[in-house]
Length: 76
Image (cartoon, rainbow, N blue to C red; front, side, top):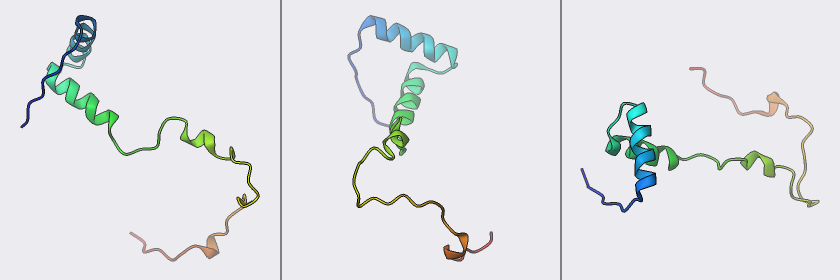
């Protein structure tokens, strides 16, 4: 496994230490966990709020979708 050195101020280190202790993790495992959580593939916060924010006639809002037009799917 690779190692990484970071320069962190004392106040931040204290916060990390306390948070890691609360989760019963080492500082290293806590930081790796938080980094992985922050880099997962997902939509940004409030991404859904941009829907409808573009005023453009080329965008049509469908009133409803009909399931009979949907593609056939294999039942699992």
